Length: 85
Picture 1 (cartoon, helix red, strand yellow):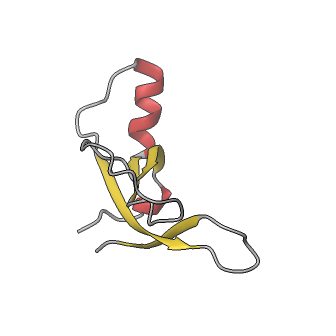
Picture 2 (picture 1 turned 60 degrees about the horizontal axis):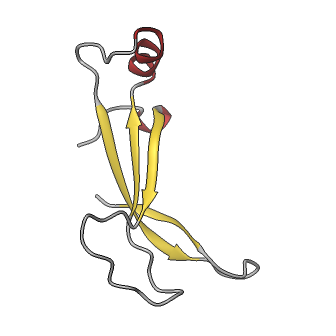
């Protein structure tokens, strides 16, 4: 269950296909893996930027999305599909 207004939180980081396993050497154009976005509450981000520490009650959220292949007119690449539920 996601918190209210989570989509207005601050993006702390993003990755695609991040893994801690050995590379499989996937072929070019293959599915790049899952999009991962780490979000943090706006008030918690502001506190961290002021104090250099996360305040009590800070919450982060990891949002995973499937990759979707670009269609015309794009010539290649992927974009974030629906979030995993």
